[in-house]
Amino acid sequence: MEKKADERFAMESGGAPETRGRVLVVDDLLSTRLLLRTVLTGAGYTVVAEAATGREAVSLYLLFRPDVVLMDITMPEKDGLVAMEEILRQAPEAQVIVCTALNFKQVALDALRRGATDFLPKPFRPAAVLAAVQAAMERRRQEKSRRRRSAMVAENATPVALAVGTQARSEERQESPVVPLAWKRRG
Image (cartoon, rainbow, N blue to C red; front, top):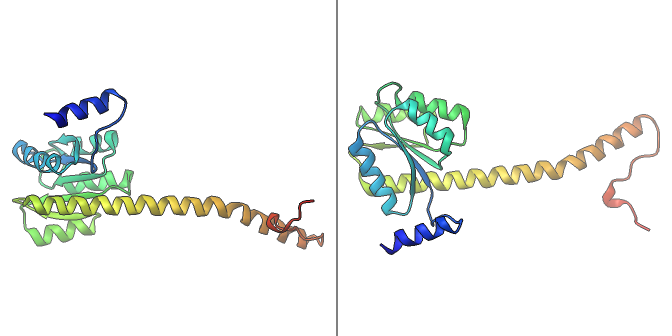
Protein backbone atom coordinates (compact mmCIF):
# COMPACT_ATOMS: atom_id res chain seq x y z
CA MET A 1 0.00 0.00 0.00
CA GLU A 2 2.84 2.40 0.85
CA LYS A 3 4.50 1.72 -2.52
CA LYS A 4 1.33 2.79 -4.38
CA ALA A 5 1.15 5.97 -2.30
CA ASP A 6 4.82 6.73 -3.02
CA GLU A 7 4.25 6.20 -6.76
CA ARG A 8 1.15 8.42 -6.70
CA PHE A 9 3.09 11.15 -4.83
CA ALA A 10 5.98 10.93 -7.30
CA MET A 11 3.58 11.26 -10.24
CA GLU A 12 1.65 14.15 -8.66
CA SER A 13 4.85 16.01 -7.79
CA GLY A 14 6.08 15.79 -11.37
CA GLY A 15 8.54 12.95 -10.80
CA ALA A 16 8.33 9.34 -11.80
CA PRO A 17 8.44 6.33 -9.52
CA GLU A 18 11.76 4.50 -9.32
CA THR A 19 12.01 1.87 -12.05
CA ARG A 20 14.67 -0.48 -13.33
CA GLY A 21 13.52 0.05 -16.90
CA ARG A 22 10.54 0.20 -19.25
CA VAL A 23 9.25 -2.95 -20.97
CA LEU A 24 6.69 -3.64 -23.71
CA VAL A 25 5.09 -7.10 -23.37
CA VAL A 26 3.75 -8.71 -26.57
CA ASP A 27 1.83 -12.00 -26.59
CA ASP A 28 -1.53 -13.05 -27.99
CA LEU A 29 -2.40 -14.89 -24.76
CA LEU A 30 -3.69 -12.66 -21.97
CA SER A 31 -2.51 -15.15 -19.33
CA THR A 32 1.08 -14.92 -20.62
CA ARG A 33 0.97 -11.11 -20.65
CA LEU A 34 -0.34 -11.11 -17.07
CA LEU A 35 2.37 -13.55 -15.96
CA LEU A 36 5.12 -11.43 -17.54
CA ARG A 37 3.65 -8.23 -16.10
CA THR A 38 3.60 -9.77 -12.61
CA VAL A 39 7.19 -11.01 -12.85
CA LEU A 40 8.52 -7.73 -14.26
CA THR A 41 6.66 -5.31 -11.98
CA GLY A 42 7.54 -7.47 -8.97
CA ALA A 43 11.21 -6.95 -9.86
CA GLY A 44 10.83 -3.17 -10.23
CA TYR A 45 10.36 -2.84 -14.00
CA THR A 46 7.59 -0.75 -15.54
CA VAL A 47 5.43 -2.46 -18.16
CA VAL A 48 4.60 0.54 -20.35
CA ALA A 49 2.13 -1.36 -22.54
CA GLU A 50 0.90 -4.77 -23.64
CA ALA A 51 0.10 -5.91 -27.17
CA ALA A 52 -1.75 -8.96 -28.45
CA THR A 53 -0.58 -8.75 -32.09
CA GLY A 54 2.55 -7.90 -34.01
CA ARG A 55 0.80 -4.90 -35.56
CA GLU A 56 -0.02 -3.51 -32.09
CA ALA A 57 3.54 -4.19 -30.99
CA VAL A 58 5.04 -1.98 -33.70
CA SER A 59 2.62 0.87 -32.97
CA LEU A 60 3.13 0.68 -29.21
CA TYR A 61 6.90 0.49 -29.57
CA LEU A 62 6.94 3.68 -31.64
CA LEU A 63 4.59 5.38 -29.17
CA PHE A 64 6.36 4.43 -25.92
CA ARG A 65 9.96 3.68 -27.00
CA PRO A 66 10.50 1.12 -24.20
CA ASP A 67 13.96 -0.06 -23.16
CA VAL A 68 13.13 -3.71 -23.89
CA VAL A 69 10.43 -5.64 -25.79
CA LEU A 70 9.39 -9.18 -24.85
CA MET A 71 7.88 -10.49 -28.11
CA ASP A 72 6.01 -13.72 -28.74
CA ILE A 73 6.62 -15.14 -32.21
CA THR A 74 3.34 -16.84 -33.11
CA MET A 75 0.55 -14.24 -33.12
CA PRO A 76 -2.38 -13.23 -35.34
CA GLU A 77 -2.19 -10.44 -37.94
CA LYS A 78 1.61 -10.24 -37.93
CA ASP A 79 4.06 -12.69 -36.38
CA GLY A 80 6.62 -11.56 -33.84
CA LEU A 81 9.64 -11.89 -36.15
CA VAL A 82 8.09 -9.64 -38.79
CA ALA A 83 7.07 -7.13 -36.09
CA MET A 84 10.59 -7.26 -34.62
CA GLU A 85 12.14 -6.54 -38.03
CA GLU A 86 9.82 -3.55 -38.51
CA ILE A 87 10.75 -2.19 -35.10
CA LEU A 88 14.47 -2.68 -35.77
CA ARG A 89 14.22 -0.91 -39.14
CA GLN A 90 12.78 2.15 -37.41
CA ALA A 91 14.79 1.87 -34.18
CA PRO A 92 18.01 -0.14 -34.65
CA GLU A 93 18.85 0.34 -30.97
CA ALA A 94 15.72 -1.60 -29.89
CA GLN A 95 16.30 -4.53 -27.56
CA VAL A 96 13.85 -7.29 -28.56
CA ILE A 97 13.74 -10.58 -26.69
CA VAL A 98 11.69 -13.18 -28.57
CA CYS A 99 9.66 -15.88 -26.83
CA THR A 100 8.12 -19.09 -28.17
CA ALA A 101 7.39 -22.73 -27.50
CA LEU A 102 8.00 -23.68 -31.14
CA ASN A 103 11.01 -25.71 -32.33
CA PHE A 104 13.24 -23.98 -29.81
CA LYS A 105 16.72 -24.23 -31.35
CA GLN A 106 15.83 -23.47 -34.97
CA VAL A 107 13.53 -20.57 -34.10
CA ALA A 108 16.08 -19.14 -31.65
CA LEU A 109 18.84 -19.15 -34.27
CA ASP A 110 16.55 -17.59 -36.87
CA ALA A 111 15.40 -14.88 -34.44
CA LEU A 112 18.95 -14.02 -33.37
CA ARG A 113 20.10 -13.93 -37.00
CA ARG A 114 17.26 -11.49 -37.78
CA GLY A 115 18.21 -9.10 -34.97
CA ALA A 116 16.75 -10.37 -31.68
CA THR A 117 18.72 -9.48 -28.59
CA ASP A 118 17.92 -12.75 -26.82
CA PHE A 119 15.55 -15.70 -26.84
CA LEU A 120 13.33 -17.16 -24.11
CA PRO A 121 11.67 -20.58 -24.42
CA LYS A 122 8.15 -21.15 -23.11
CA PRO A 123 7.08 -22.04 -20.51
CA PHE A 124 8.87 -19.17 -18.77
CA ARG A 125 11.03 -19.43 -15.71
CA PRO A 126 10.78 -16.08 -13.87
CA ALA A 127 14.53 -16.05 -13.15
CA ALA A 128 15.32 -16.53 -16.85
CA VAL A 129 12.94 -13.72 -17.85
CA LEU A 130 14.53 -11.32 -15.35
CA ALA A 131 18.08 -12.30 -16.36
CA ALA A 132 17.33 -11.76 -20.07
CA VAL A 133 15.63 -8.39 -19.43
CA GLN A 134 18.46 -7.21 -17.17
CA ALA A 135 21.08 -8.19 -19.78
CA ALA A 136 19.11 -6.35 -22.50
CA MET A 137 18.84 -3.27 -20.26
CA GLU A 138 22.61 -3.31 -19.74
CA ARG A 139 23.25 -3.64 -23.50
CA ARG A 140 20.94 -0.67 -24.09
CA ARG A 141 22.77 1.43 -21.47
CA GLN A 142 26.13 0.55 -23.00
CA GLU A 143 24.88 1.39 -26.50
CA LYS A 144 23.53 4.77 -25.33
CA SER A 145 26.83 5.51 -23.63
CA ARG A 146 28.79 4.52 -26.75
CA ARG A 147 26.59 6.73 -28.93
CA ARG A 148 27.05 9.68 -26.55
CA ARG A 149 30.83 9.23 -26.60
CA SER A 150 30.84 8.97 -30.41
CA ALA A 151 28.76 12.13 -30.69
CA MET A 152 31.11 13.99 -28.34
CA VAL A 153 34.16 12.87 -30.32
CA ALA A 154 32.51 13.87 -33.59
CA GLU A 155 31.49 17.22 -32.13
CA ASN A 156 35.01 17.89 -30.86
CA ALA A 157 36.68 16.60 -34.04
CA THR A 158 34.83 18.93 -36.38
CA PRO A 159 36.81 22.13 -35.56
CA VAL A 160 40.11 20.26 -35.84
CA ALA A 161 39.15 18.86 -39.23
CA LEU A 162 38.17 22.32 -40.42
CA ALA A 163 41.45 23.81 -39.23
CA VAL A 164 43.47 21.09 -40.94
CA GLY A 165 41.47 21.49 -44.14
CA THR A 166 41.96 25.25 -44.04
CA GLN A 167 45.69 24.79 -43.52
CA ALA A 168 45.96 22.45 -46.51
CA ARG A 169 44.06 24.87 -48.78
CA SER A 170 46.22 27.84 -47.72
CA GLU A 171 49.42 25.89 -48.41
CA GLU A 172 48.14 25.02 -51.89
CA ARG A 173 47.75 28.73 -52.55
CA GLN A 174 51.28 29.25 -51.14
CA GLU A 175 50.03 31.57 -48.44
CA SER A 176 51.26 31.49 -44.91
CA PRO A 177 49.96 28.39 -43.12
CA VAL A 178 47.04 28.65 -40.73
CA VAL A 179 48.11 28.29 -37.12
CA PRO A 180 45.77 25.98 -35.18
CA LEU A 181 43.82 27.85 -32.50
CA ALA A 182 45.49 25.86 -29.75
CA TRP A 183 48.91 27.23 -30.79
CA LYS A 184 47.85 30.82 -31.27
CA ARG A 185 49.31 33.19 -28.72
CA ARG A 186 47.01 35.57 -27.01
CA GLY A 187 48.45 38.88 -26.29
